Image (cartoon, rainbow, N blue to C red):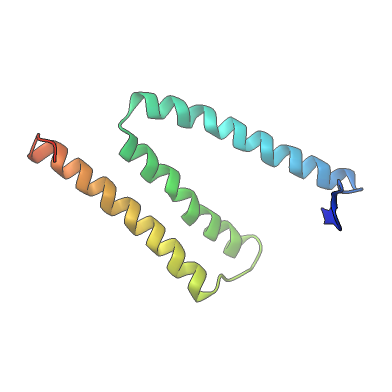
Length: 101
C-alpha cells in the first residue's frame, strides 16, 4: 500500500473491497459498543472490548494457520490480565467498600 513517499491504493478490486468491509465492520461494531457503555459500567465494557485480542488470536490460528510467537502471546496475556485485574478491583470496591480513595 505504501510505495516510496506517497500512498498508493491497491490495483485489485478485491483488496479495495476487503479494506472497505473491514473499516465498515469496525464502524458497525462501535455503535453497539457505544450504546453498551452508556447502559453498563465502563469496566465491564472495557473488559469485553479487550476480549477481541483473544478472538483475533483464535482467528489467526484457526483460519490463517499462523501460530503467534511467545512474545506476542505474553503481550496479549499482560493486556488481558491487567484489564481483568482492574475490572475485578473496581467491581470489588464498588460492592464492598462504597467509598472513594
